[in-house]
Image 1 (tube, helix red, strand yellow):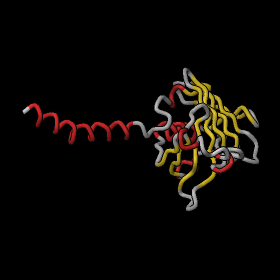
Image 2: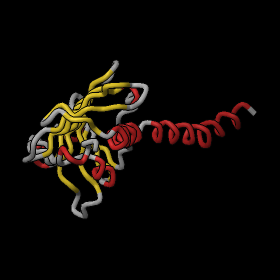
Image 3: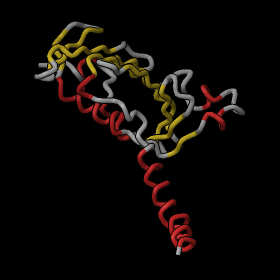
Image 4: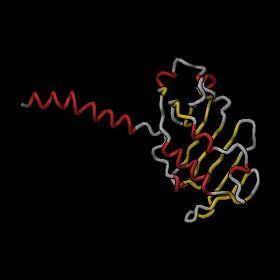
Length: 171
């Protein structure tokens, strides 16, 4: 019976446990808490940087600080932060695979990213580079600065990134 139990664990339970771990590890920024972020910087390619700072944590009030100082809409900023917190990779290119690709930064579009997103907060700090789109345009390459892997993610969340200050500007 011990042998049967061992075979069951090895053939059935172990693959299930490994699949759960694999699925759990698909989130790119697992420690990102949108409520703890108090500064967001967006650097679109060939456009002005957009900086927003949280003014009131309780009421989700934000203010644009660059390129102009103006009240910002908290809803769109929070939507971007929540999307980033839930963002899962569809394909991952491990650092070991990238060692043989000295031109990886250029190949995946990180030498001139579409966007650079920097987040600061209480115990939270990260910088994300959004590289080139996939051939079909439904995915995009993403790099978290400091993480040696490159990720391929769905591109639908990119609509939440402003390319102009007026997209987050409060009325």
